[in-house]
Length: 309
Image (cartoon, rainbow, N blue to C red; front, side):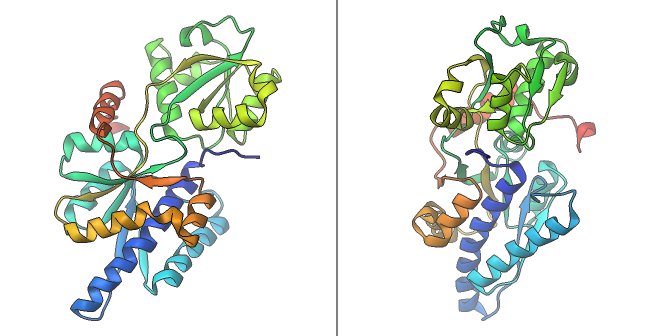
């Protein structure tokens, strides 16, 4: 059974669906005052937001469900665009081709360096504001730090949030290896709980999860949790961001939209959406957010253009 962390693609869907429902209702009201017609609002995602990209039927079903939800809530047609990557999304956002953008936190750290006028409107939180990666092994593992894990087998659960892989890649590189060469094997259990169970049972030697997942495992299975120990952990990563370009949405609409996001958990359908996609809340941008972005950018510089996927 999966625990609190979101699967990445479902996570995008949850953020976009909740945001769309709120912003569309605002846009509908503003448009009605102007000319009684509503233009289609385009919202861009920096990554693949489909829950099953390799299953055409399930992918089409998920997208149809999302669009139907928006239509039911607002009476509006809508368009959701899955951009190639964070660079392409930023170009579309600054040109006005999309009105809002959804970025992973470390991507937004990269964006701010090149596009300082792209601003965070709100952050999407799953239990903890700033996720932290934890690398764990059994209590009797001799490793004292990440370097000591060289040659061991890793359980990296399927659809782990990208910041987990980012951290593991950086640590492997610091030890002169790629992730796949640093570890003897990289397996992909279905979810984080299964990955941690596999380490306890000796199937794999190491697991990498985030703080929310590790805390949930501790609550659910305290006896098994006691058989694990932390080997290394990351610095805090920025959470996913809903962003806008400086002058594309007026301040009054932004403020109303923000109030809607912050109150999502107090509305029946908003609470359902948050629960369904493993989110706990939307929050205002905290005062220390720029410092976290800067630290992330220094520790994890953006890939060069030739590395674009």
